[in-house]
Image (cartoon, rainbow, N blue to C red; front, side):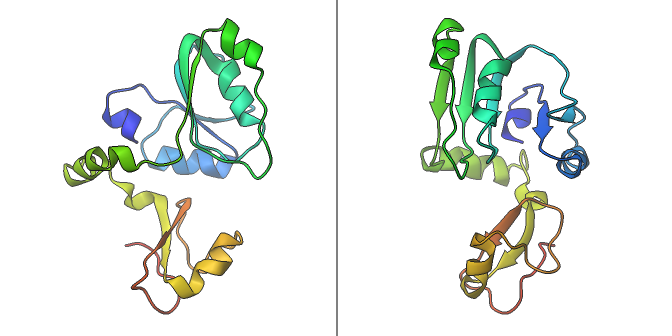
Amino acid sequence: MFARAAGADVHLMGRSEGSVRFARTLGFAHAWTEETLPELPFDAVIDASNAAHLPARALDLVEPAGRVVYVGLAGSPSLIDTRTLALKDVTAVGILSASPDLDATIRAYAAGQVDPRSLVAATVGLDHVGPVLAGKRPAGSGPGPKIHVDPRATGEAQPLS
């Protein structure tokens, strides 16, 4: 969403048809599964997945002298071929914390350039975090991939409205 707000031509690769359909509801016309992704030149690739094999795929997809940003974390180690990284002259960056750019994020939200609400499937209080961290989606969750934790929330999970 931030790349699109910055004027980039964004293409998304989802891990399932459901995630591709969800991306299209957000206005992303260029959305495919890994199997249907067309061969296109990509100047930059952002890997925000939790699939151990996709960091290497991101490196394969980016054009020489391009940039790969690794945001996602898999449950097992991800391997990339550093020969590909060096020979393609790719810049690879790992980002764990968005805190350094939090001011710009807040400005984008406030200006309506990016609206994250559709990404949030439900809001839970601290008393319901355990099952969410164990990978269980709260009953009544919407289609979004994220669960918002609000320490002030009580009771059952609430879909974001």
